[in-house]
Length: 98
Image (cartoon, rainbow, N blue to C red):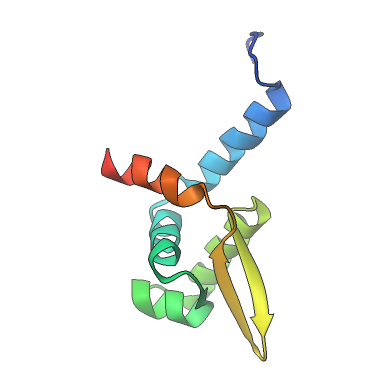
């Protein structure tokens, strides 16, 4: 890695880059876009809406949850997923509308 100077600490830049890497997948972008429109959904609702396998849906949700892009909340016997940060929809607007 090149040495450079930034007003933002390198660790923060690295964390942000890792979040962007986690978003940089067509299925993950589609999931985030769906959650932006529907607010809270179960894995099954996401899977059915996007017509992808449930195991793939779960995998992508776990990857995004690990990067704190989505959060989960259990109600009764169902797990609901939602976007974890109010700024993510704005980022999606910029990325998807360019």
